[in-house]
Amino acid sequence: MKHSFTDTIFEILTKNFGEDAEAIFNNSELLKYINQKTVSAHKGSKARGSFGNLYAIYVLVEDYIKEGFHKKRDYSKYEGAKFSALFKRQRELPFGNKLQNHALNQRMNLEFRKYFPTCDYIPIIRVVVTQRYWINANLIELEVNKKDVNIAESIIEIIDAYAASKRSAFESFIETCERLKDIENEQPEEIKAFILGLLEPNIDARIFEIVSYSILKADYNDQTVYFGFTEETIEPENLKLYKTGRTNANDGGIDFVMKPLGRFFQVTETTDVKKYFLDIDKLEKFPITFVVKSTETVEKLTERIKTGAKQQYSVDAIVNKYVSCIEEIINIDKLKNSLESVERKGNMPDVLNEIIKQSKVEFNYEVEE
Image 1 (tube, one colour):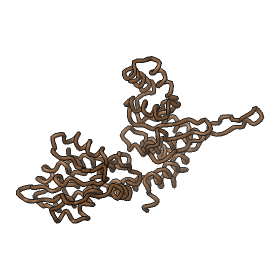
Image 2: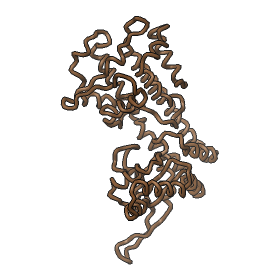
Image 3: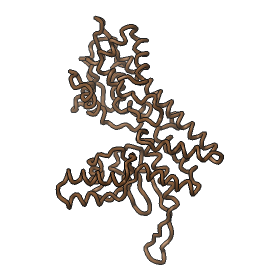
Image 4: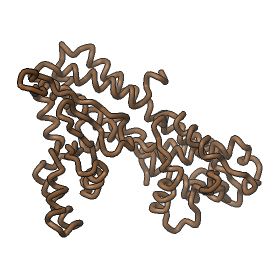
């Protein structure tokens, strides 16, 4: 598959290997896999970045180079890298500060096998008992055109270039937000158009979660409920939405929490009903609102969930229990309606400010400035 970042991959290979670059690429499943995972490089901040599996490769290849195995051929005698050191290094890399251990442990190998089912090797070798890891040297020590070729340093260069491209796109995104903030009183329509552009099915899941939270928080904040333990103590209270942590975190299916109603919100980009039921199960069937990155109508999404429930569970009582746990489905159209409501109240700047704030936190931007 050829895409815009493929040219960068070939530039690096040509710089390092000259006329052998194309043959090296064609003979390397690992380079082809990296090519697959870097398709979003030049699509801007709104395209999903692939860092988990790439950084699993990166830290192992980096360890391989640090120990000098790209220059000597005795990697088979190496005791392996410690998991704790690899995991720590992943989180030091750009956009890697919240990565989990899934890629190192199994996810990367499984996906690689999906792309290259006939390949004799898996990229990551590990011994679970000792928590030691190796990159599979067969995938980086190649023989091309009767020459011994080591692509370890090129892999590091390629993934570094991809991360730099994604960081540049994100910095441009933040700069645009800051510029719009400066002209919010003069050109409110431009701000609205920008935010609406972030509510598209193809945007990065993290950006979608941030934008949906920012819109809903501003919209709910002007809605009032009355609470009190007795009739005499009942008082008005605005609805307040809170983020529970980083996006895509392993938090048991809670992305936002609303006070004082105690509503739970889960943001999802999938329409796979099994994922919905998994989140419901994790919360022990507590009612949950799903914010779905989809332009399908709420009616279609609801019907799909019901159909999936009937296929998975043939007992009506179980089906009805799962469906009753879905308090509300908020799709892209509902988010747009909420944005219209926010605009009518004159609170559009609040949405933009929240997007800037949450984006900087999410991408560790202020720390790295």
